[in-house]
Length: 120
Image (tube, rainbow, N blue to C red; front, side):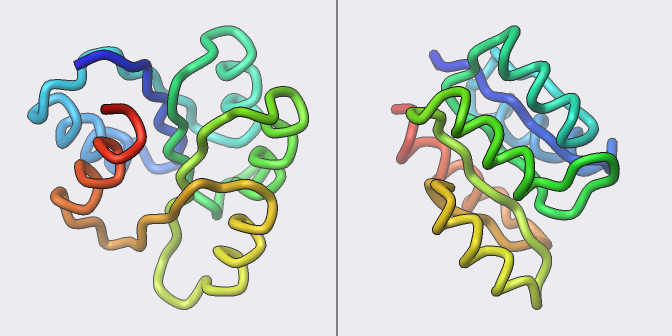
């Protein structure tokens, strides 16, 4: 499947889980970043079609990175990931231009459905 996807999460196992889910569904062009700061630099360099980004991260959280990426590229497509109980952060993310959100713990079907709705 076409489309470059950037996965941003400070937990390597979460990035791996999302990456495996996407690869098993035919998405090959996947890049990663471990925090919001790396996400901004990677977005600048790679211009992915979709960013899947955790909200809670060190150095720069997902909301801060979302705002900076959207300032740099108003057409950036970003899906936020949040744990249960982060509703106010999700609302703020949507208000700041996030396209959608996925709640942890993830269900593989939800990740694929969200990505297919955006990329395919």
